[in-house]
View 1 (cartoon, each protein chain N blue to C red):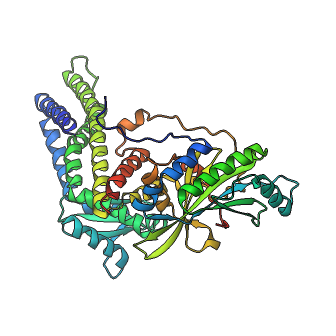
View 2 (cartoon, chains in turn orange, purple):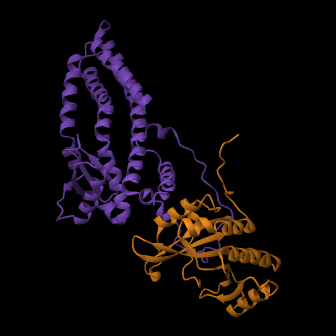
View 3 (cartoon, chains in turn brown, red):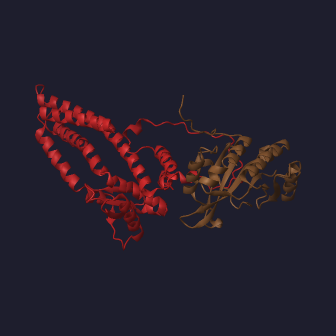
Amino acid sequence: MCFFAFKRPPSHATWPQAMGSMGGATERLEKQLDTVTTREAAVLVRPTEEQSPTQTRAEIERALMGMDRTQFRFDVTVDDTGYGWAIVKGAVLGDVAAGISQMGDVFTASGMGDRVMAAVFPFMWRDSVHQRERKIYWLYQPRVRGFTPFVPDGDPTREERDHELEIRMETAIRRDLPTFRDTSEWYPIWGMPI
Amino acid sequence: MFITMLLLGLLYGAFIWFALASGLVFMLAIVLVMVLVQFSLSDRMVLASMRAKVVTPAEAPGLHQIVDRLVLVAGIPKPKVAISDLLIPNAFATGRSQKHAAVAVTKGLMDVLNEEELEGVLAHEISHIKTKDVVVMTYASFFLIVAASLSTFLMFSAIFGGMGRSRNNSGGSIILVALLVTFVVRIIGGMLVATLSRYREFSADRGAATLTNRPMALASALEKLQGAIPKVPHQDLRKAESMNAFFIMSAVGPGLAELFSSHPSTAKRIARLQQYEQQAAFLR
């Protein structure tokens, strides 16, 4: 019998498990790692081949109509590439993660589950060395069933990322979040609306 | 590490005993002198072989600033700082003592790494100097080089000394046995020296993590040097939608080659650096 048991999250997590982990990691993320939630998160939805941006937006809005709007606020937008973004806003990270979790259920029930590409959680991080605020992202990809980090670096038009910080983030949070460690799956998403 | 060094000591002791018992004293003496000369000139020879030129603070202020910071924390005399014009990204430390040490980086390395990663790599090399790894590894490899040189001498003796011309030639038998012994010493000694070297590399990584308090900077540098950075996809997730639904994790384990490798695998080094990062995170 072990004297001390280390907390080990599963290496792969389903959508609700992953969102539960994100909500539960608030203290670690915000108090110990100094990454503060922007109080919003989003689900990225791939459009069908024949859909126009207006139709994509309408389809997402229709799917979300049945969701409880008392706890969260929703926003739907379509980016330049035609992908839909269902954005959740809440008071605390736990609420936001719960909202994203519900969205997963709603999209699955609406037959859009196979077009959900990612859930995106942005945070602000105070870079004390360079004295600046940095935006960092945790992406949950259902395909690999894990969170992957993404830190854009410098001028957004140059599409560069800070890989060292990404590795540090993943190392620091892996006990609390089901991260996907194979870096070949650490895809970026440039020009996000959140 | 102690067991590895003990085994090396036993192996080399047996080798010296054999060399003395079989009348190869003169040959052994010549080889020893050659190796000692090589050792005393090692720093200059290594720098020259790597096409590295010692640079002044005026010529490479950024590099000198990093080294100045690191030696201050490490508490050792500042080594010579050199830049090699090789485009292959690499760095090395050399010198028979801390006073005669030099640390060098290639231009290729400076092009690939950012300042924090470069600091991590230099901290690794400074740690080698601090723990006198160059000297330790030179002593550990000393009789390995002696055995290699001796086997070359013996080969020449066998070819040009008339071995096998006479059936009663006992000298030929001695040379054959000696060749076999040097071969065994080189194989087993090579494995033990490589094991020791891997310990020292892990130790230098830990030293670098302590000196910089940024283990992940070194991990990032290692990934870049390994070519892992291109592995991180640059393609946007939205454009990669046709990617394969199933992915295969590499299940290839370490092969026999790792036994003779002077460096641990990058994956193992990064895994350890990640452990140091978790420890260091609590100190920040």
